[in-house]
Length: 375
Image (tube, rainbow, N blue to C red):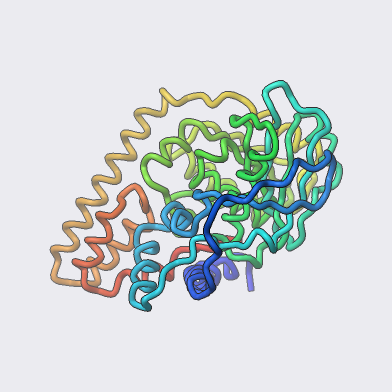
């Protein structure tokens, strides 16, 4: 089976994995409430296993669903849970059972440490070879969750672990909030881009190594207008892929094109010579961290682009309304589904009313198709 065929299978099965995990969480016993637990003292510098104790509302299941799924997919989950008489468990992961690889440079920069939350494709938590010297040079803390590889669910596990890692590191150390980045390799890189898109208030840059997806499609739904605007204006993206990694190179081309179409100008895309599908070398990491630490530019110039996107959304809504007036329900079904997949959160709750007016079981179909678990 080709890589594209495998990705297509995951696309079709994405929502099933998300819903199954969320339903299991809903049926599990709730975590006792009460006063927040006290975080342990900051551990010594260097690389070691770490455990965290603090939860963040940004990693709550309802917040993950709101930010990361299209409106129709999120509504499908909500209605399915209501039909079952169940509620989502807000803590998708139990931190008492989780471990993280944590590397802390020995010297804190004057403005505080930077942070790189790394999403791996492999199941264990580790620091890529020879990255430590670069992290020391830039004063960047590295943190990566165990059990967060390509076999783990994105919305139910990989995303909350990354958000919680960033929150807990910020509680333990003095952090430069402008240098909190998310990154990853291969399938983890694709998840990192999705986190950067959906959590621009947490991650101000993304180090994308040999893996990406076009934004504004089934595998990368667009978030709400306020989140997209913040992503456009303040997030910097660094893509690095080997010139012999043809699949990832092709994906990067589509990703960069989609970013430009959606008015994201702070993007640097490099090709690593004589390299296949491999983790970035220390030199490439250094180049990426230097770029991500720069000041975002082009926000004013992108104003006309953002207005053009707003007109496209409005035109899409009008076209869908016309399709809903057609007697052929199949025409209406295709139009509503296409609007949800293309613009997602930019349309918002209005599209749920369209799906109800369609009367064609559209919520189920919309929920199954998007890739809610990119690998």
